[in-house]
Every structure is written in C-alpha cells, then in structure tokens.
Image 1 (cartoon, rainbow, N blue to C red):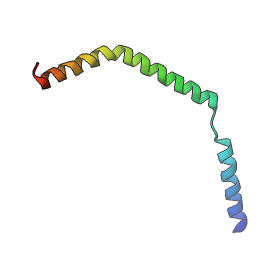
Image 2: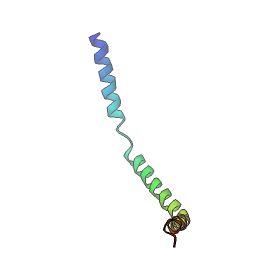
Image 3: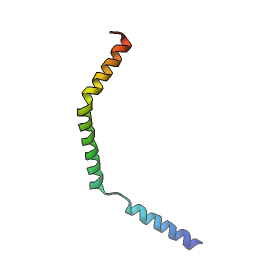
Image 4: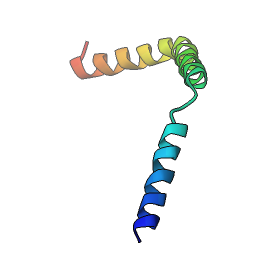
Length: 62
C-alpha cells in the first residue's frame, strides 16, 4: 500500500512539473484575445454607444 501511495505521489508531482504551461503559447493567446476585443469594440462600439444614449434619453425623458 505504501508503494502505491508513493507511486501515485510521484506521478502527480511529475505531472505538475510537466504542466507548467507553454509561456509563448499563453502570450499568443493573450495577444490574440486582446486583438479580438479591440476589433469587436471598434466595430460594435458606436452601435452600443447609440443604444446606451437612447436608453438614457428614454429614462430621463429628454
């Protein structure tokens, strides 16, 4: 039983060391996500702004 537990612990710690992540991959994912947000914001920003303005005008009654 002790060997089994030691084997499981060894496997888990080895896996944790291996799963640190691919830093360049995460940087690429982060940059691509930021790029998509900027593109979507540029395309939808004016429409969302006008919807917000219309909603505020309806609420305030101006």
